[in-house]
Length: 335
Image (cartoon, rainbow, N blue to C red):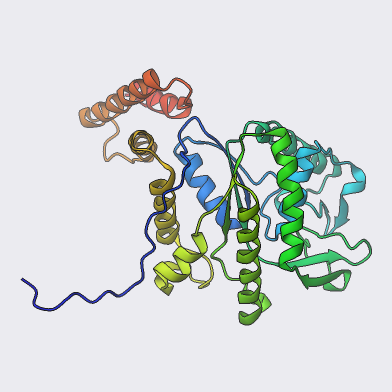
């Protein structure tokens, strides 16, 4: 028996009990920073119905709000919404992943992706919004906030920091508009744990503080809004550079997995958790590289996974495991 009390080397955030339940029938939309994509893609990998960043990565609350308003208003982008720079057509409302050397292709990709999310938003159960920074860039000639500068010279923009009231007022109106098209929508706000040190250490902390206070005000005024402490989990709970990538800014794979598990513990029922684990094993099995692809053991492995997929679909026929089923079916035929 230990005579001395164990020393605690970290402050751990305990699981939060929300009056919400995310399951495999839930429609989930993620908007915001690259952290949003990390979590959204992990859910997508294990076959949750997810729509992630139809405008690409967004960092500030105004750009997120503008994007949601574009979905609500069913906006279609035209030639006047794009500009030519660095031999590509770009949109100030979109991430550079939508930029293209051909104007028609740029607009086609933008509107095709947009139309998919317009319909998805109407049936979304949970909207995850992740704010990254309070700092914004406004196009000098129009005073409009841009989502991405596309490496256009800095002289073309005015940089400033949002205040709490600006964010709160915009989201007060936005949430009312969202409830008109989807009365059952629940909104979960998070703050990206990625520090924007290009703005400066002090400036980054001011920026994150503004975001946190604004979200707190939004939640107080809206019963369908919640906060998930992704920022606090990394900064206060994990609190160690071994949980960061080499740039010492972005959370690494271990940190993302830790936060993802926190989400699961907070929102998944026991039934959803069990189904999640079954699907995760199948997805991981698909990546398995056998020592001998013609062996009897590998044949058993393939057959086992086909049986597992069929068993899951028998009880959950709304799931899409067609890619995994086709993969193992083809492997079985090849042996």
